[in-house]
Image (cartoon, rainbow over all chains, first blue to last red; front, side, top):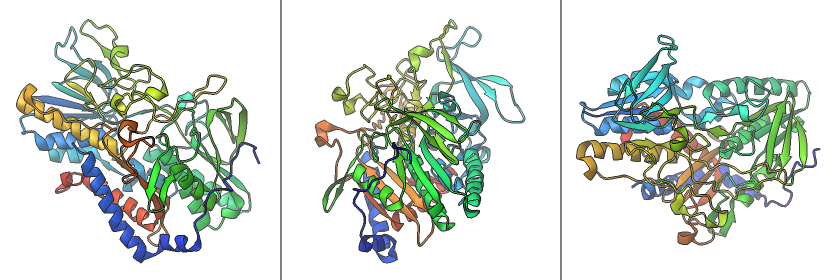
Length: 48
Length: 485
């Protein structure tokens, strides 16, 4: 292995609950709605 | 009657053309000059590059859209800009060379009252010997490049299936590249593809970048607000790399690409070599080759363009140290420094400086990501410039000047990390404002309520939705203008 190639052993890792939440249709359906709302707010804030 | 010529039909130019046509009565002409016959939704090229989409799903012909909307279209490349006119043609005009099969090689002069430079970047593969599809690495910058890249990727996956280990090197092909987000996305889509093909265990995936730390994205990093406090984008990104087993070479300037190996220099001046079986490396950008002349025919390119080839606009270009950079240095109206009837939109404007701290190696090599200004900001700037021109045409000098400072707007980046309706993954990141404003938001320079990141299936759905939404908008389908940039 090249010495300049970095791995990230100290980086925080998601736990099993977080990984499951990332693909839960119910949870992600809610996050999809929240993400849309947040983005619309941000877009409106930046348009002059 | 006023005639507006728009050079370029990418996100900024096409957005400006459609809005101008919508806002102006028919007696005013809107003219688009672009060397390509097709519009390309570039963010989805990464899916073409892994074989999940074909080029027809990310491109469409421009001519039928422009015919339907009453926009004059010239498939041609602008080569000369005569902002004061010339001895043979006193009105301001540009000289173009046609690229369409029917008129290949013909030249023409296109007169204008107003001009928008939305030419985007020149993909500067020549900056790094051996870089690019004509050299020893692949690219996803255009749909055509991405299609070639997908074939090369499939070949490498085939070799993995035959038991041959493969190293995939993805990232930035020069120390001054931008668009780290695209390389990041492609890295994780390749990794996802390797998992789906059942060959991940025999593959090494390495991301090579000019960022001094992961999560910089050419924006000096971000601090994401969350219910648990502030999470630096570095931690957010490193976590994803560790989770997916992707390794990285940081703060690297790729010096040359040979068959099967890149040679690079790091910020500390050390040199290294990384072997690969498959490499997708993005090129640095520069302004397109457009020469400007005054009425006497003297070359005034250096008066209107920065040395990078991008157009100088209403920004503060005075050189100053990183600590003195201000959000107010960034342009607001995008009007040319020399001509009050000319604007630059999207990537074509010259940024006053980087966002990330500029750094160089002891050998004097610049290793500093250029500031990103693609996607959302390009569209917003294109619309603002179109609004300003429409106001000027309708109300003269009393018309409202619209602004779109990147220091006052946010941006969203949905970085795909794998496809699939039930198992797709993406990182949704938003930032507000794009340009850090330490006077307004303190040391982080950004609003941590509006700056956040999360990973999940919902972000993948969002990416798919935006793909369809923006192609619908670009095709100028009914009520297209209600979709924000």
